[in-house]
Amino acid sequence: MAETPIIKEGNNGFLSVDKQRKKRKKLSPNPNVIGIRIFQMIVLRSEKKNKEKLKSSFSLVNFHIFANYSK
Image (cartoon, rainbow, N blue to C red; front, side, top):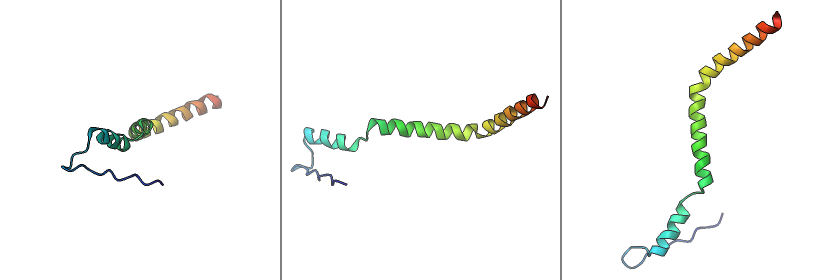
C-alpha cells in the first residue's frame, strides 16, 4: 500500500482552497463503492423481511408441484 502524503497546514492552521479540494478528493470514496454499499444494505434489509415470506412461498410452490405431479 502506498502511503498518503501528510498535508501540511499553513501558518494559521487553515488549508489553502486548492489543498482543501485535494484533501476532499482523497477522503471521498469511489462512487461505485458507495452504490454497492447502499445496494448491499437494501438487499440485506429485504432479505431479513422476506425470509419468512420466501419460506412460506417456497413451501407453497413445492406443494403445488407435488400436487400436480401426483395426479
